[in-house]
Amino acid sequence: MKSKSGIRKNLGYQTIYQVLNTCLPLITAPYLARVLGATQQGIYSYTASIVAYFVLFAKLGTANYGTRSIADKRDDVEERSKVFWEIFFLELLLSVFTMLLYFFYVIAICRDNKLIALIQCFELVACMVNINWLFFGLEKFKITATRSIIIRILTVIMILLFVKDSNDLWIYALIMTLSNVLNMCVLWYYVPKYILKMKIDIFGIWRHFKPNLMLFIPLLAMSVYHIMDKTMLGLLSNYTESGYYYNADKIVNIPVGLIDGISTVMLPRMSYLIGANQTKEADSLFKNSLELTVLAGTAMSFGIAAIANEFEPIFFGPGFDACIILTIVLAPVLIIKSFSFTIRYQYLIPRHEEKDYTISVVAGAITNFLANMALIPNLGALGAVLGTLMAEFVACVLQFISLNKYIKMRHTLMNCLVYVFFGVAMFGVVRLVATISMPIVLKLFIEIILGAISFIILCFIYWKSTNSKMKDIIVNASRRKLD
Image (cartoon, rainbow, N blue to C red):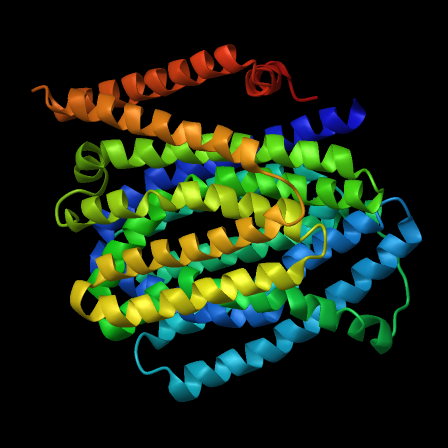
């Protein structure tokens, strides 16, 4: 009971944080669209995509490897401390080396927007002090969530106070990067409570390089369809198309945090259960988590697509009509990510099945690169969106095939696909409301309310008729108060 209560509380903290993460961009995105404009946002998107490659090499696979390693040694403070310092110093050394390479890029290779590119180097400073993985491994999500909430709110306030026109792009970049540095530094205050001071040697540090590298390879491949879309748009199209894609991607990925938050909480728990040979409990927990995640992803996917025509003109203002079709086409990626995130972080990685994970994302990366090369020159941002969908789908299918070798998922898959039909029905209800003539703000409000009600009613009818556990899981979670 204690472990289940801990999962509920951690999910609660992550949900609160991710809900705030969802709400805050609803304040900043329309403001920035009007103040900076599509072209300036495209510049920021392009320069951020470049530094993101350097960040990948600085971190390797530490986010997942560090979480899993700490979870494995959670009950032994000396072993935990030893592993922590070894992984941290490996991350520090890699970050310093990568920062030197980035400075070379800015000085010798970068031709445009050098100031923005230079400011982006603070993302690498954040990598040097990043120890989120320690607290994720210990399942101390209250610490990471509360700190992030405060800093996120301060970031929004700073943006609204200091970013006033298109000439303030450098201020926006500085606020965003420095907030990440502060976010990471604050965590060090809590380290002495969980970690002992220990002497380590270079061999202890080096032993983590290879397993870290094995988790880095799929992360590098994933970057092709998470980061390279923006890079290739800047190279094969123009900054305006990149700005359209940046905003559509931002809207669709606002709720991704909620999906990712579930897997963030479950990764250390699944690693711990598997390490303790509690495989039956781990498999049962995985199936329930997958259904819950797909339920959330499906509702958000069809919901975003259904209201895009009314929402985005209000949200972004004039000049961003192109974002509507991009958002509608990109929205199904939330359903695909619901499957792939859960399989990846709650089954393959905790069970050290890096090979299957790597094959799937490399295949997705190749698909995305080829699709981008073929589609972006003629279709611009829409080509990048189609490439992303293809890549995510290919990777997800391969991960599901790998999963099915270890655990039978037919019944759970059928349960998950039912929610897609409910999403289609919700979409139909919303678009029916859209045909009624009324003020656009009132129409949007009614669409959201009736869409949510229709989806919830269909879910409860289904749960009641099939005696599904999902109703009890959701109802009990909603009633549980955080300590």
